[in-house]
Image (cartoon, rainbow over all chains, first blue to last red):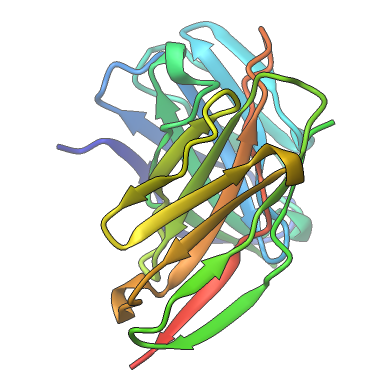
Length: 115
Length: 116
């Protein structure tokens, strides 16, 4: 039972570099989302998707791009990394009918450091 | 705008003591959902409970209990007879299920440490 799988778990980047955080789920969930977790800030929504081909911005979308070409995958792209993007990133999914009612299934997180 | 406040940043208690984690929320909607998630030291987030705004009944699940009071906009979480495995960061969250608003608003979390 893989659930939500995030890769890589750890990454160090230099300012200006680009990278993609991968997220895959095998539960056939329509809803997928990316959160970032920062000390004293809780979790904040970056982008979300309610199905293949549909994405939308969350609370803190600047500096991040997403796409949803398949139901299973929802990659998060940092085009030009900045130190302010140092954070722990969580991917989460759920059936779309419960997307607003909780029961999100979270990945294990990806810790990103931007120097 | 919705907001969740967890005023307790860190709490430490001795094992077997009871502990209550506070959560206060703000919302303009009459329909909303409240949640608690647990983040153990391993880092993953684990769903604990969901409560909708029309159900004010308290809930008990083993050593865990939740007290939902709309009059004070609070959704507090109590662990009785705490154990070391309860050590984690606990997040309270709020959702307003508007069409197109696919969002959970999380509090800043309370770090609970159970001292053996």
